[in-house]
Length: 391
Image (tube, rainbow, N blue to C red; front, side):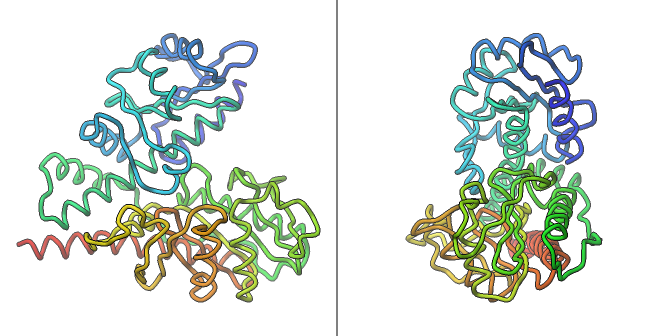
């Protein structure tokens, strides 16, 4: 258990979510153990007495996340309610506690997967493994990032940016990580045998995480080899895909799809509509932010944009489509395939980016990175235009 606690503490710092030596991760097996000694451990140990959990993560986020999360906590004291897909699916909303005590943490975690304590950080929990606490911590940071930048853009469009928001935004913008423009050297295709496919998928998954094009490790990846789609399993870590890839025959002759990504049906339809060999899906932040940006205030579907948007919207030529995770009448299995097959890249509202590769993941990865780069540039260009218009 201690090894797992140390592993996910390292992941939090490796992904830039926390400063080195900051994460405190506890795990309960026969005994309660922590990844390191910390004065907070004694008080947080009492959380395990009040909840049916086996792991806990507590950490102050690194910048720029600390500033934006503290701002949101101050301006949303009743709880933060982001509208991105990951929040709707996993977090629902994020409680805000007044202080870091076992009592306040237990109260928050009884309702949700994570709780924010202004000035102290985020506490998240898991019932099976420290991995869950890591995922919920990362998802909380991601959701707050998207909400903060969305709120600032909306305020700029109204021409009414509160001074506190302006000050926080300037600090956050100054601390944004420099975007990467280099490309990884991934395995070149075509990939004729299964072993090469599996190795290439694992390699591409690690690159998506390394480049920060996904929160925690969410996303999915697939490769079509003949009449079989090899796809990452649902809930699998993109940076640890070895042993977590399912071969799913297109004729449905195997039951592997039961553990495959929930978006397998969308992948299948895309392959039926195109000659692409592979699909890559990540959750880059600015693509998600701009997918949710709309200045049509009187739209009858306002509040249901993620499933009912009827506008033909794009970001720098990349189509934006509505759609929920999985299948069903409003599932992205219905909305994504036509757009993705036609353009090679598509953004699902509030969710993330899907890209295609003709022979290998080099093209798919380049499209994913380019889409996020274009969206980041478009975001700040919009702000500049709104500022010029208000002068």
